[in-house]
Length: 261
Image (cartoon, rainbow, N blue to C red; front, top):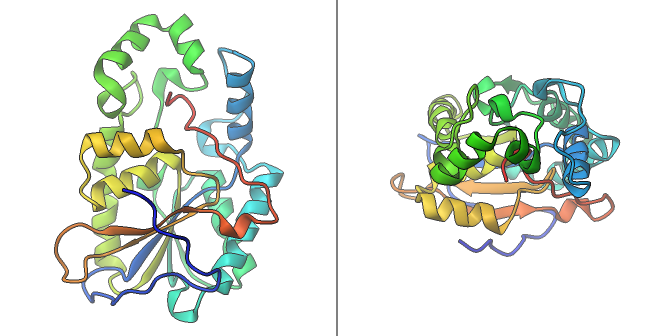
């Protein structure tokens, strides 16, 4: 599943719209958050606990994340009018919602935003705020279960597996198809969610999904575009993957999903 070449900054690949499905989906991972910064620092220092004081849903963007969101907005403004989003769905988490508002303001787009909790990040349960080292040291039985079951099906107590997230995404994507048919939809969400939207819409196997995850984390404020099948049947296709060309003058950051080692 290699990414296609990045399109010119002024536009994105075009495809005929189906009246029964969105014209395309533009998937965005939120800008860098203070949680991303703290998690990376914790891993680098071999700490067991990530130093964040907010609950995951309330973790804000870093200053660099705000810059990234505004750069994304400038990219959206530079698109051909027929490619600019005319519907927006986003995660309710503060970092995703702020990314959405900053990007739309920078783009000068007055598009209603639908906030949907099914687009939230994966819930980590008792492993929340723990690094991989912290899980191994403090929850050795859970570390063993995770190794046995693997990323796709391991569900930490009180949390979700990747398969659980895929299940709720199947629901929200059905609603997006129904409520945004024929529209150009911007979806602002999280690293794992971008991967799993591709898993659902491209009809990937578990092995294909995990290979894509191993290859790369979705970078902050990057742009991924999926187009529906031209004939209305079969899998969607990714025509742009994790593109950060709009971040030329803003630092590019890549933070793995917290607790997802």
